[in-house]
Image (tube, rainbow, N blue to C red):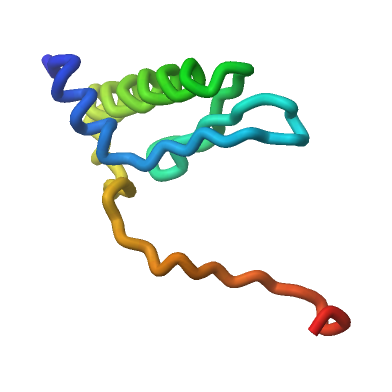
Length: 91
């Protein structure tokens, strides 16, 4: 059986994002490299803690089901650039 520490270490390899959503008027947390969907709440730190716990649970579920974990997303180097498509009228 997998220990909680092993689960935490494996879950820590996935980028977790918690940000304010004006549309939802709350903090939204997600871990896109590991699972779809997310969680929300009015306390940023609580949302992050819950997000970490859910990530650990997903690691346990995948391993229990004998499925491989997705490629890690944390600790990667990104260019800092992103492309935005706009209409030709705005050029």
